[in-house]
Amino acid sequence: MKLEVNGAPIYFEIPILGGIPITGSLVVTWGVMIVLTILCAWLTHDLKVRDISKRQAAAEKIYELLYGLVHDNMGEGWMHYLPLVTALFGLSISCSLSSLLGFWSPTADVNTTLAWALVVFALITYHKIKGHGIGGYLKGYTEPIFLMTPFNILGEVFTPVSMAFRHFGNIVSGYVISMLIYAALITANHLLFGLLPGAVGEILAEIPILGVGIPALFSLYFDWFGSFIQAFIFCMLTMIFIATAED
Image (cartoon, rainbow, N blue to C red; front, side):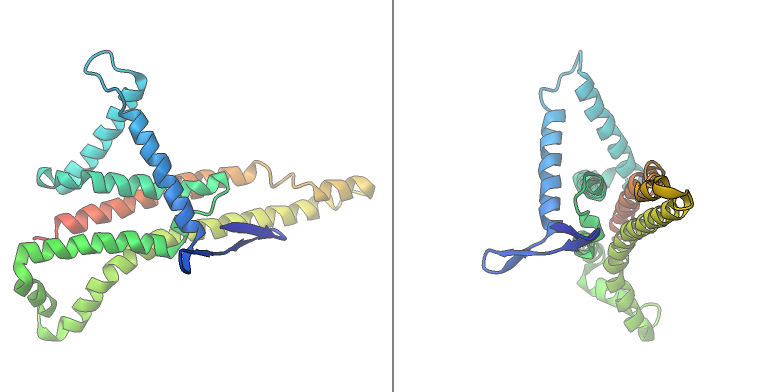
């Protein structure tokens, strides 16, 4: 949950159910999942073969784009992972963009991205064991020589860590840069209009004129483009790691 004191955000937990913490990230994530579920139900309701509606056309276009993404990167034999990739992409971009509505973005919480990465890591490990057997999987840690075993183990462990922190770090850095830009504009506003004489300068200096419009331009990159590209990268890594696990 989020409060603001003197313009500074404060995040807190609400302990319920025997002390289990319900964080702002958890609440927003469940809210996003509910909205996405309702949206999917609405888009796929009353489908037709002919004389389709604009709603169905939009649903089919989204499906074709996601189908092509998974098919091109994983192959025909891996299409059963289409729902997973779709869910990760939709959840990631929606959670990131929730900040535009004034909510705390769950993707700015490393616990959220790490949970997604651990799910992907479990699937990667499953396919490695499936493709090479337990013996072959364990032997892979000793290649090309036995001395590389500790480094191979670290490399395996850092796979979900790097996926989680890459996503989390880019979202948080966008927040930080946006706040720094806004703070700089407010300071410039005070300095610029404070040069005007009398009460006019004092009044205009208190009105965040420079803080209107300009931050929105940066939001196009840090919020919209950044959210999309991080969701895309996370899904690309998911598809590549899983599809190559049995090789």
